[in-house]
Amino acid sequence: MAGTTLLEKSEELVAKVQDEALDASRHLAEGIAKEAARLSPPVAEEVTGIVNEVFDFAQRVTEMQRNMLNQVLATISKPTKG
Image 1 (cartoon, rainbow, N blue to C red):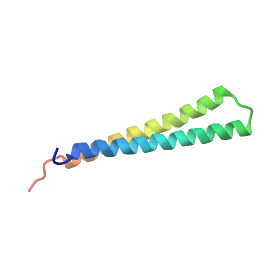
Image 2: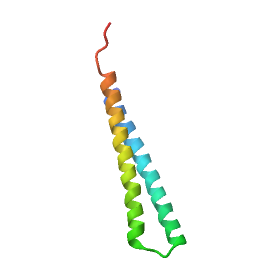
Image 3: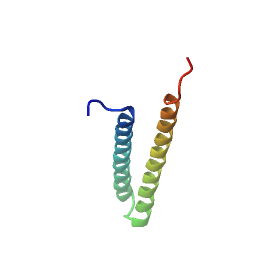
Image 4: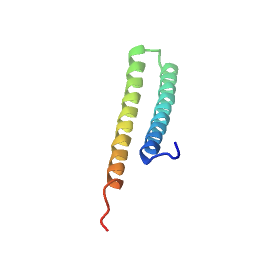
């Protein structure tokens, strides 16, 4: 393939952003779980709840990024008047 299309570049960008957001969320969840265990006796349900909240947050952020990128792509793909 001679060149990469805008769609392919956009997909790569979205994948990279999602991977980075999920990786950061994993690190955050690990840190929360570690601190929760240090500060109180390990309670699996509480830690699981915290982890689920962190991943739910990451999922919402990823969905917002998807919507934003879709809006950007919709805007730039509209024909220009000229």
